[in-house]
Image (cartoon, rainbow, N blue to C red; front, side, top):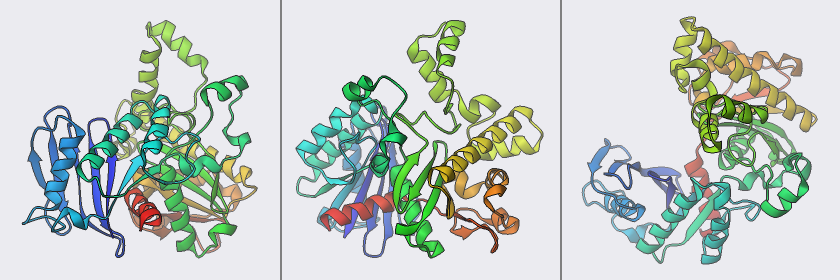
Amino acid sequence: MNVLVINCGSSSLKYQLINSDSEEVLAKGLCERIGIDGRLVYQKEGLDKEITEAPMPTHKEAIQMVLDALVNPKTGAVKSLAQIDAVGHRVVHGGEKFSDSVVITEEVIAQVEECNDLAPLHNPANIIGIRACQALMPNVPMVGVFDTAFHQTMPEKAYLYGLPYEYYEKYKVRRYGFHGTSHSFVSKEAASYLGMDLNNSKIIVAHLGNGASVSAVLNGKCVDTSMGLTPLEGLVMGTRSGDIDPSIMEFIAKKENLDIDGVMNVLNKKSGVAGMSGVSSDFRDLEAAYNEGNERAIAAVEVFSYRVAKYIGAYAAAMNGVDAIAFTAGIGENTSFVREKIMAYLGYLGIKIDRVTNDKTRGVEALISTADSSVKVCVIPTNEELAICRETVKLVG
């Protein structure tokens, strides 16, 4: 099967065409500046990137350009659209309604729309992408894969907040978690790579990118994760604050004369390691500043690493032990000095890091703990597009 994987943002769209039998990426790219002036990046496997500037008033025009590129006689990945067998869509928030991927129907779209309040930036864009694909490929089956689904196995004690229970009953205010597709994929890949039985394992996944979260995966099921109602809870991130005392919001609002939207903008876009360091949200820049002795950059890196280590320790407690820790995503896969900093806090678990292997590991599967380490520590590159492809095939293959 050839599966087109679509990840639709408010003004952008990422795509990959994957052959599910070989799991080879046939073509990939993105559309940027949708609704402004439009830009298509297209790359067939083995060829250079092509960039096309063209008006894209809506996502429908963007997806039409993607489809045209995929069947281009010279550089296309397939001869005709008939060779695209299914479309897998990333959907950010499925609320409590979706604990697994689903074949998209009108009823499913209506239920996703009911979750729009929980993800006002992402869900409407996801639905626009689905609608555009339906209009252009009316006979091709579509599957929705939810960021929140994997975390729906969390027990009540992990997802309820210490708030009046009526807020949960009336508004479904609870912890949902995100990056679920990545956490699911990486926990399975880690078990396979390490020769563990997923259904009899305690794995902690650290998805560390610009957005970052940790999850506790017990016997293949998520029992806790660091993000909450929104992706703002949990770890210190690229530009997000992570866990803070809620009273800080009132304090800052009064001092800076900000309304609630202004405060939320600070917490989401001006905080994290970028806000702390004054340098960047990119760990490559932070590492350079750290090595130059920049005190704010040093503080940002130390706080980031410390918070990750605290969550890993908490989840070892939640599962009454841990067999493996898997690092993934941009920082987790590529920034060895941060991995080492995090692991330095976890010696009490019997963790021992192979420094030489850790230092040279960038973006590839690797065991970075020593043979006598009580817990296996590994790097597992995430692949959310492949995970969405697999989920799609499972439902419509």
